[in-house]
Length: 246
Ligand SMILES: Nc1ncnc2c1ncn2[C@@H]1O[C@H](COP(=O)(O)OP(=O)(O)OP(=O)(O)O)[C@@H](O)[C@H]1O
Ligand SMILES: [Mg+2]
Image 1: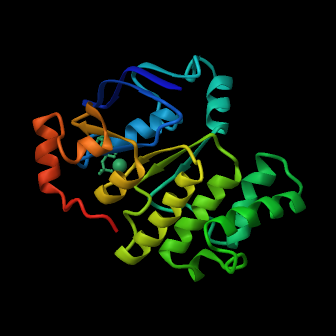
Image 2: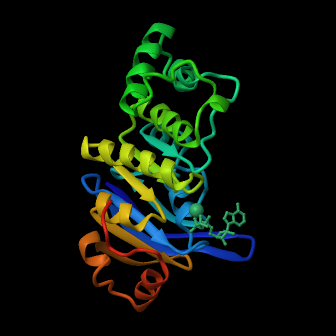
Image 3: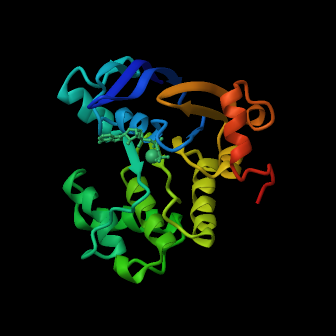
């Protein structure tokens, strides 16, 4: 369980997270949606300690992650994060990118790391791309390498922050397919996405944010047909969402 209580985050004079409280159940897939600047990435970054909240508490299984460096390190070792910009090492091949943290952080031997990394790359459909450098890969392939790199570390939870927003529509579909399959396979994740059809299909719960606040936590079947708040109704009416599935 991730328990977030009265989280606030200020950047200079802007109040980016405003009394955010929510409990994330590990058995449930969440999609966080909301307009640009509503605080989605900041919330995700607080969950894995990339940002330190100004006030409030985040507990994972009753452990306050900001209470000590050890607590934070432990929480982070169980959590993976996939960003919009793939953050790959340009001078390393796909397999070397995936092996890197396995060797440096998890202290696996090269042979073990290769085995784990190749399994992760196979899982995202890149068994033919082990030896390609990032500049030889499409955007969708780069994002799949970045997902494989995260999976290889066996995290208990993966945070995805708009994993497809840097991709063209075709590559978006290929990456979303991979994420959907992983979730179906049991991957636990919290996703920030602006892909409404995807959110509806993959998430059990929609967390709707507006101006630094969580306005709704609603089962996705209900959210897209009958959002509880006027703000969410307006948000949905401005998105391209038509309710169709791909
Ligand atoms: N490091 C920072 N320094 C100053 N302001 C920041 C910083 N990070 C975020 N902000 C501000 O906080 C607000 C929320 O940003 P955040 O990135 O969490 O929004 P978001 O909901 O993820 O938006 P988007 O959909 O555009 O990614 C924005 O107004 C942003 O400019
Ligand atoms: Mg963001």
